[in-house]
Image 1 (cartoon, rainbow, N blue to C red):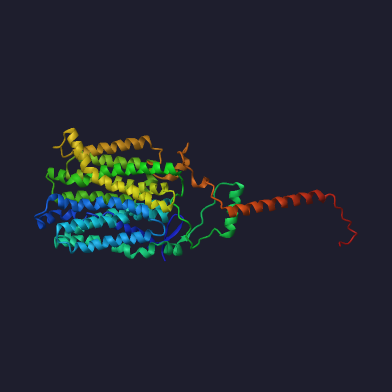
Image 2: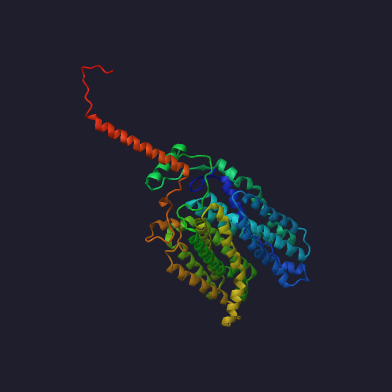
Length: 500
């Protein structure tokens, strides 16, 4: 069996593939409809443009409450069941799309699609958080983002091609959930616990009596060697935040994710209209849009290398790329300037997204709560996508820029520039730090921050009782040794006398 590094041991490769396969599904809702909206307008002559747009919007809107629902009900013992139910609904919807012949049926199925996808989305990130730690987790979260973005590129091209044969065939992309559904047995606690190779954690730097005695007792009971058992999972490897601080950090991460998603998603809504305004073709628009996901895929694959190069400035540099890309699209109007602007912005966003996921893993107090925390975070993605036309439309009216095709990119570039200023100002904060491990070196540390190596491990009452007994025995032995030393000079032995 092949293994991959999990940060605290080795993970079966098939389990990693199974967990990452969930990411194939998270960006698909509404995707099949987008390239064929014009074709559907020809098929259903009696429907309005709003009804056709609902097929794209509804899956994302319905997804939001079910992401929150999944985060609330997911526990360690039922998360595979919820994943199976979500993927099953997702796949069933894909099958039913082939038999839908009315607009009402398509709209209802779009809602059902959002239900299935909403149950699945939080688990795509939380399972990586649960089974990986440290740099290995950062690497796999980058892979997760890359896979989900690459799926968008491939599926868009596939749908555009196959829809020319029959519009019903475009919905075949919603059959992708069959892949992770079949791989669920390889991502269960039972399977991973049986086949995972773990290395016992390094000892703490504390040297007080109770801690040292507890470690001695633990080492006697269970040697520090590679084992095939699964220890209690935890999200926090380097740092730990108390309750209120963790909630505050989560809200800050949610705000950052919402702002960056809103700022960059303007490409999907307004780039086609802007490029057509400057006499560029539909094919040019397709290539430019694909560049965003291609760049995000590339930066996800290179995430650990990017962080090792830019270190603490990683987040600030990524936000700079987003600002530059948006302003390029707002002020330069050639084909290659759009391609380059979208690519630069996508590359920056492709770094920001997995880093935020990684930070959420650290903020979650336990693995059991990581799914809930990811659910709250990921709702910001879909809210950010949904509010773009409302905020940009309102800003256009406010500034009297309804006739300016470039306003949306310039305005959102300004919004992201404000985020950049905040990132530079708060560069020492957890939210804008690329790697929480660097917080070990901060002076003074952030409130509530404590490196794991400086935290005294919890000692059970039974172990404390045994420690107390050991201390008493040690004290008695010390008394006996002192007595022997005192009597050593008093005892005289006659060598001529044979010993009794």
